[in-house]
Image 1 (spheres, rainbow, N blue to C red):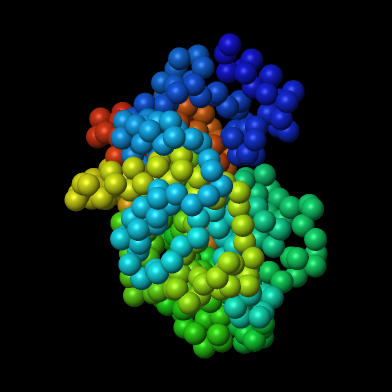
Image 2 (image 1 turned 90 degrees about the horizontal axis):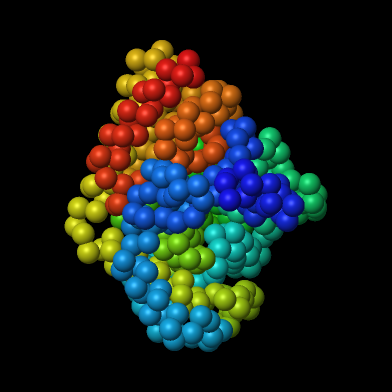
Length: 427
């Protein structure tokens, strides 16, 4: 079966032929390759074609595909049973390992998805403050729960529908909006609604409007606003946690401490796992210790815990782990920038730790409006040219790329050579 046949069959069974929208490659005007297997920094489609993978399951695979230690941990856990719906020692072990990296957190709650982690964080914030409103930022994507699909990034931006049908207006009215990196706008919202705002939720390093880091002073200002008005500050590190660095964005902006951090992706090592964490007193407001209800049948399931624990152990076992990732991301983005200049193509690049992004524009993106001004038609052409040359990038201008420890210097060099040809082709 080839990729076209596989996609045709899938379209008969699933809406758009996929089970998560951006996978359909619609925004780049192509049909998706169907993946058969992964190995280190590569993936292989059903036709046997090999690609250098910079998507890595949208972030979780920081150790690369099918890392022997992760596979071994999952296999050993699976031999004992796939799920129990009861406490296991693997939950405790993974929680301890996460808290080693994020020492200012005291307690965690495991869930199965990033959407669920942020949804729970909002419920917790509303429950402890007794307030209904939340403040989010245009272009930040925090999962597909109703109150957060308002000016969302990620797939919502890709398909030109920042707000989804099916979201009741009574839910959306409690979601207040500001532009990313606009402190004056946030101050104005707090001046008008401060006593009603339960929390501010933000991607401190945005990865769902493309790669757009927050300004340090902007985050400091949000922390001050929350303190002044009795609101909680939530850092959504589902993507940036363990990706932007050893402590994610919380390490990059070390002087700014959020009340709640949400995790996902890397902490599951490729399996469905996510979490939220905070101080003990705050977290103990969740049931069964407190009255704010949250539950999940497969939360903390042993297979996901084993994969996540093995992944974090791989990270922790190598002192220069993030130095290597950062160097390779920098080399890649510098290579893209130079190749674009040589071809006369306007391109802005950026990176942090193992995360990177680029926009086809001559202006650095600081917010969602800037990101939307990029040349998405040129991105689509570039994406297809790179795919032809065996480089698998996220099929949307509004997503982030990832380097794994299995992405070698030779792979980076090969990707830059492909980019040189691709930029010439799309000029």
